[in-house]
Amino acid sequence: MRISARADYAVRAAVELAAAGEGPTKGEAIAQAQAIPLKFLENILGDLRHAGIVRSQRGAEGGYWLARPAADVTIADVIRAVDGPLASVHGGRPEDVAYEGAAAPLVQVWIAVRASLRSVVERVTLADVAAAHLPARVVKLAEDPEAWVTR
Image (cartoon, rainbow, N blue to C red):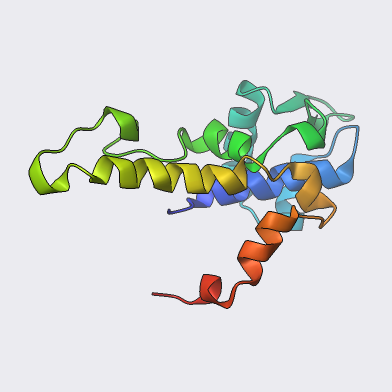
């Protein structure tokens, strides 16, 4: 899986909002805290607002805040809001592709890849990351030395 800069920035911004708690946080503060270009961040926050993850208010007392409790927003929710489906094949759903002959089992491989990805990003919330308290399953996966090997 390739995590786009857009998805990475969106998750980092959303975690920053989760850590900030209730009330508005200025876009400039989020951009500075996470070293995200402000114009890019504003577009991302617009996508998150459109998806119902973030709310915003203009003006001197304005800013951004989470529209739902951080414990109710998963990493997957944020990624989908800015990048669309977690796993796609040629822009479509893995179960909608069909291969012939020896390649036919690849559909199951692509579906398994999506399921594996979901098993992490659909179970980790913004609150988990903001509190540095990840689910045990995720910690165990990350602690596996093989997970750190680049191939």
